[in-house]
Image (cartoon, rainbow, N blue to C red; front, top):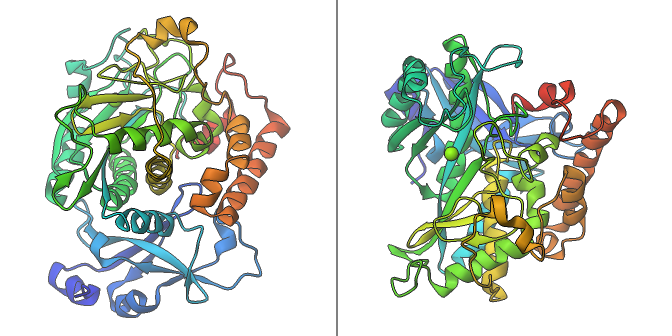
Length: 441
Ligand SMILES: [Mg+2]
């Protein structure tokens, strides 16, 4: 039975609801609705002008409505008066095809036709920086190899603990927090779940971290590469496919513990990785993180070539444990829904076409890349990724051609705007345009 939000508001003393959605560029948008109005909104949705968001609509288009999903409700642990809701967009009574959450539900439906569902986890790295984005917040965090630095981690104890306490309260099952490989960089991990649950939590996590950092006088950024000499913000994703309670990626007879289905899924991702970069690495700044030279710590921890391996972090795909693999391509600017959409659609392509990923590589790809010149390379800049996307029949077939054309149009507008004042140059310092447009991604 559908949950009654008005009733829940009374029980939990929620005074306001944030009815929110994410557009094609991953921007989180909301209306703040008093609980007295939530019954009507639950039925008919909150109205928005689509043109005012990144959805390729016109000012003449009729209103679109965000229909909240009551199962996504989160009572803000730091402000119990407010309940957050993820929504699906409709227009003229029909789902908006370019609504990323609607797109993910479509892909989930495709998987369910094969009696499969995807479980996933995401590792969201972020920096704590000063207000103008010119540097990291902690002036004492200067080690050249700062990963897991206990003192730097504990200087942020108040904030990290508050975020982790929130995750415990929300039932996400957080299990570790650490200082990451760049000065000022952190990561917090919580349990994997069904991919729609993970995508909603991913959206909320970014909002929560930014909000609580502000409360502590700090600023958090998920920007892929805010500092050219430091390791960037990845958003690695772990995936597995399940039928009911059985992990269909698991095969204990295989050297890495993966089934044929898993290798086909993985093979599909390798085949379509170049155009998928347009979603996994969607910003101009993203391309400072991939194909990057070593950073101050000694490694960029991000891929350059399309390869897979066992438990080896220098490749695009790593198999850390039996029954799942980790995709290391995505960065902090990836749209949480389109990230999952991209994985499922490429994986389904791989299953349907029995894609063979070939033999895994076990070399150190950061130092031995010259011996593997035949491997396909990841795009060098966003324009290349968009060109690959334009030529990708596989993605157009899977995502829908209209949505892809809209995305390409909006991205090219953005690139033109950037090119009017700047040139993308990985060796040059990060531009003001990149900071102004990506620090709050
Ligand atoms: Mg990490």
